[in-house]
Length: 130
Image 1: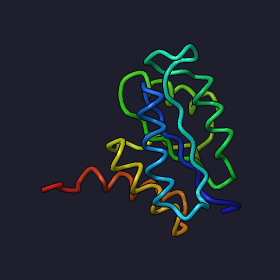
Image 2: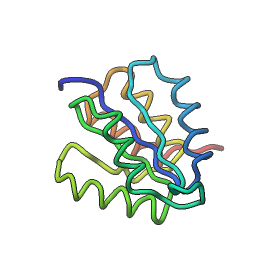
Image 3: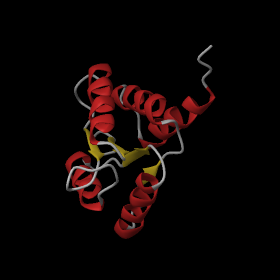
Image 4: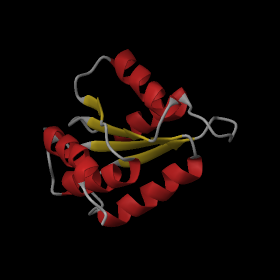
């Protein structure tokens, strides 16, 4: 591992992605590179490949990057970017957007390696709220 694991939050909504980023940044210790990629380039709901790519470039420190996406085109866009980059250390996690983001941020701040961050985010699917 050459640096911390990065986290990219991909959403259809710029506000949703930025809101989750604000939450997880407060839970982290300030050492985890995180970025939000939400909305289209012209401010509508949707997903922008260029925004997701810029977020990846912003958080990539060499230890891998975890993507959390809300649904639909956010998942498809993240998948396309990962395929285009062709790197095994870029992982889209099948996890709830908020709970997965929180779990990933906490695990990355420990600091955890890529496998630990992915596992923490994936385990959030099993957490009961009641």
